[in-house]
Amino acid sequence: MVKGFAFDHFHDVAVNQTNPINVPRETHYVPAIDRFLVKVLYHEARHRKIPITKLLALLLRDALRGREGWRLAEAEIADTNKYKAAREAA
Image (cartoon, rainbow, N blue to C red; front, side):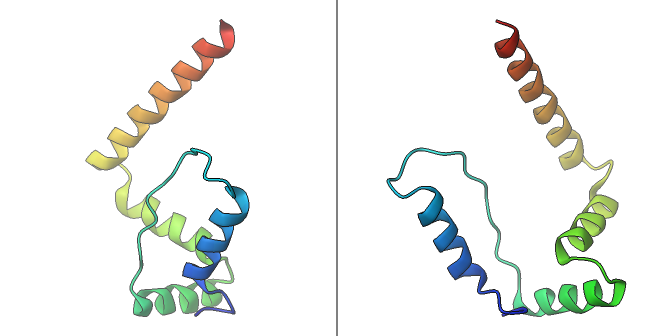
């Protein structure tokens, strides 16, 4: 547990509060992160004086920019944005 957050419990509560009657909704994969790595991230974020989420975004962008997964995600986002724009114009 990091700074009073119980991640699994928080996720369950958030899902139950935002979707109390099981209405279909967009979902995202939520990977589990090894406890040791969570501790490393926590300490590194404190050292840099930034939130863990910002640290993760920085680390992941630096590690993945220009890779195949990055290109595929950019293409998917572009397609989604084109679809939304066309739908709004109609």
